Image (cartoon, rainbow, N blue to C red; front, top):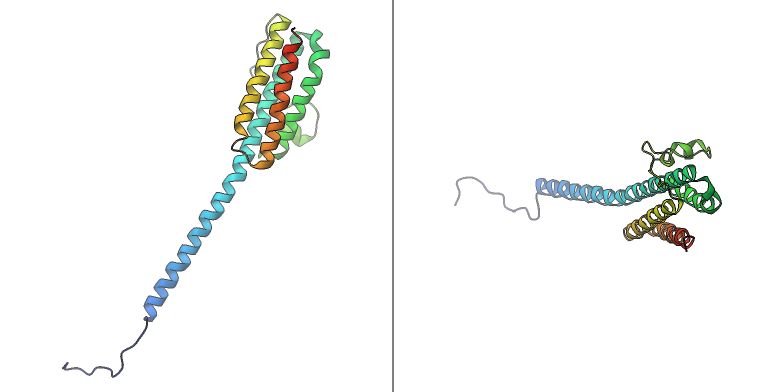
Length: 180
């Protein structure tokens, strides 16, 4: 027998300290899981916005190519103007939903966007047919890249990328058919 008095009844169940420690651990787990869930949902829209911004920039660079060819070969205007107008619309549509719209889109002015007038002007062949072939090649490459990009894009952006990629492929076809 112990030399000290023992309580006649032993406490059953968890002690207060155990309950508080368990509650704090559960609250921490809930907070951590809440943070990770919100981070994963925030990542997707920002990736989509980056993809839209890059697509707008790509369209702007292609628009710059059209402008350079038209400046070097004004006689191609009747053939290239409708295609150039489509590329300009593509740039505007992509810029509408991107994280950082181009200054031209923000000001609402129809003037060429900064991406349409890059700091380094694309070189244009002296021969009109070669210049048009290079435009067709650029259209094909961009259509292929957009086709690859749409695989990882959210549904609405994937539909837009598919539509613009198909348009680019049609432009490439129209540009090469004129040579025949």
